Amino acid sequence: MTGVAPCANASATITVTENAATNAGTDGALTVCSNGAAQSLFAALGGAPQAGGAWAGPSPVVGGNYDPATMTPGAYIYTVTGVAPCANASATITVTRPTQAHGAPVRGTPAGGQGGGPSVRWHTTATEPGAYTTP
Image (cartoon, rainbow, N blue to C red; front, side, top):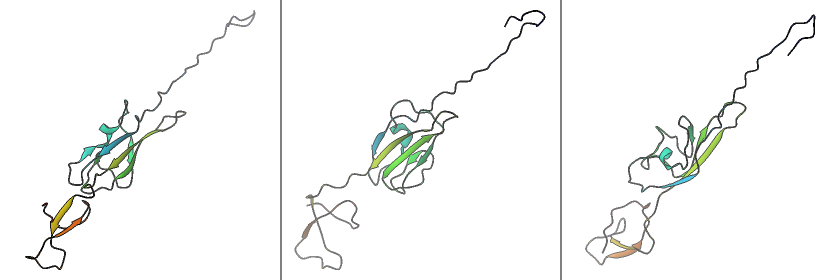
């Protein structure tokens, strides 16, 4: 600013910092068999998510992976913390486990039953315990 005599000229410096918006990617889905290998939840996110976020869900997430042997299916939320004044960003991965189709017959002997007699046919899902053979 130009000063008017006898005042000197004056100046000021302002520093503006722009924080980048956070990006957690976009929602996705992951289908994993109950006896399948662990899979990356991060890789199931769409878009270009930032690394360094945190996972929350029905089971604790270790190393960003979903392990069907130890974890429960459901909604797993990835959150990237924003730098003020930017808000946090989050995206959800919905994990499902397929079950055996109903109506697929299996043969076996019921618990406590006698072997060697006529076979018993029933319908089951992959979540019922036991050893089964198909006809």
